[in-house]
Length: 303
Ligand SMILES: NC(=O)C1=CN([C@@H]2O[C@H](COP(=O)(O)OP(=O)(O)OC[C@H]3O[C@@H](n4cnc5c(N)ncnc54)[C@H](O)[C@@H]3O)[C@@H](O)[C@H]2O)C=CC1
Ligand SMILES: Nc1nc(=O)c2c([nH]1)NC[C@@H]1CN(c3ccc(C(=O)N[C@@H](CCC(=O)O)C(=O)O)cc3)CN21
Image (cartoon, rainbow, N blue to C red; front, side):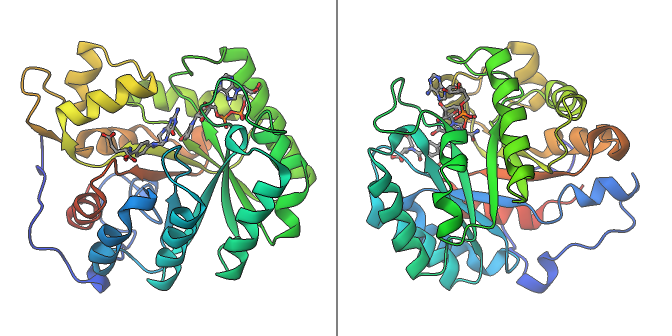
């Protein structure tokens, strides 16, 4: 793997900010790494504090809405992100909301710490909605978000499809969310599910544009982690990973304790991007328990 994974010698913040030049492959290559976003859970607060020095100020940090965490953990995580000088992007899981009151209680707590500007509106894993919101669109169209100061909404994207949702349903949902955001004049972004197959991601991004969806797309990439952990998450999230895809990504299935980083994936993505065909494309790093490791990896990585 060219460049390898470097975990030591973390650069100070001023060196982390990247400039667009001499990357060899043209303008779009360097912009793919500019303004990346990251993801944390409510359990990651200390890791984010420890990694803060290597993350550019203002970086968007998503706060997941997991089943085993509660409002206090989610809001405390958003507060830590804010305090450290980053932009919190709390997740709102439509199907996990038991009532409109639950949504408003969450937004009230977020507004008290000035963390409602940007949210990620997602369907949620429960097979049956726990309350009034069937999907992400229902939350967006409820009008509740805007009442609490939400001015920017991101939504999910699935280059590899979704194990429980038919492809036509996913495409129609994406088109409807894009149309609703345009109608409401709310800027949107698509954040994609993890996918180890860069070719599938590139063709999916082009297809999104063919469907008339023009929002920026943040391609979801896992930070460096053991092969075992990555494959475990892939299987839990229903992401297909054939031997060919694993090999292309640099995942050695015969060395589960070995580490795999997104080096090759990001280089191949950057090399394959054509702004005329793909529009604005950035990166979103999933950290799966390794927030600090991921932040350090990003600050040491160059294309
Ligand atoms: N993209 C990502 O990073 C993440 C994705 N997910 C999961 O992806 C799924 C889809 O989320 P969105 O794109 O926001 O869809 P969405 O809320 O826009 O819904 C699209 C369509 O799929 C149906 N649907 C939504 N969730 C479902 C589920 N769990 N089981 C069966 N049908 C469902 C909806 O009724 C709707 O017809 C959810 O299960 C969500 O939890 C969760 C967290 C992060
Ligand atoms: N379908 C789906 N549901 C999700 O919730 C989801 C996605 N897709 N796509 C990616 C992101 C990242 N997801 C996650 C899910 C769990 C942890 C996590 O840390 N879970 C455990 C510890 C790790 C483990 O079980 O090995 C935890 O205790 O929170 C992190 C990110 C949530 N997101």
